[in-house]
Image (cartoon, rainbow, N blue to C red; front, side, top):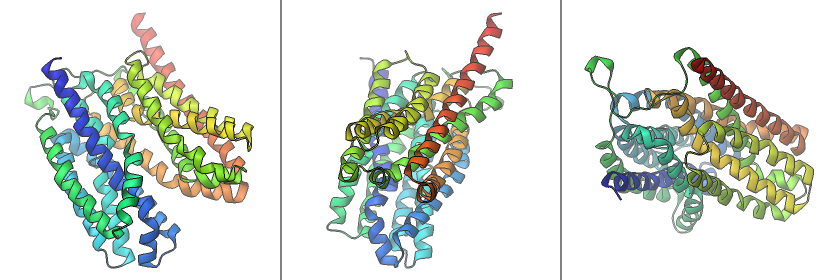
Length: 404
């Protein structure tokens, strides 16, 4: 095994640890702590989730700025700074004396997350070695897929003996003691993209598959497809249990929901084992297609438990691949130059769509029913399939022109 291969695996493993901590502390832990937060501030619990949705929106709006800083200063430096920012934000939220400052603290947490989670981590892998980044991103998402599996029970266990504020203090210490040193080390390995004025270029840069005149239109298609899939994933996941209950599945809803996580990890493992045999655009098409297929299975199976279990597995497979294509598809289509800024813009649109998904799905489900909500979601999934198919058509036309 070569030294570079060993270092590459060490980089992915270390970055995977910080992603588990990042998603676990800044995102997944909120569900386990929300009830106590609402009780402390005398808020209805839905208001607390509303504040969280607004904080996600704030994080999305900050993503393009994070992408610009990543391209200019290097992803490692931005992530190291983000680790300190995450710790400060967690402490500030825990110290908030009133609901307004608490909501501002939540926004600070999600702003910090923009600098330490996937969009920054993907850019770091591209900057360290663009030619192996697609494979590294797949490995990273496989590791990070265990964040909810680890931090949902861990947060609940901590909260059994600690207040939610004390839990946040513990999480802040982890960001400073674990994530910051790792990101500081990775900063020394990543290469900041050089501008043309310096007279140097990044070694082993990856060229995109699209010519300049096609990039803007294809970028719109790519972002639209990713945003639609993210919207559906967020809407259904947040409302998984009440939705299944409304369909007559009752107490089996919890069992059905538990299959989502393992299926998500399984799809990432499949992508890892398939290597380069399936290109990112192919994965995007598969991911998008699995969403309406899974919903149709659920609609046709009614209250049949076996059909609902199959829905959870197929839906989880699609969601697992969706996380991978967020990092690999922009690299394959547009190349490594300007990757951070491009992914930052895509992340902003994705997070804005995700922040509104729970409310929109709940509104439709309350007024039109669970089945109508699922039908609309399936249609949106088919639109996502069409957008990725349009990208494939545009890429094929470019290839035909180059060959002729």
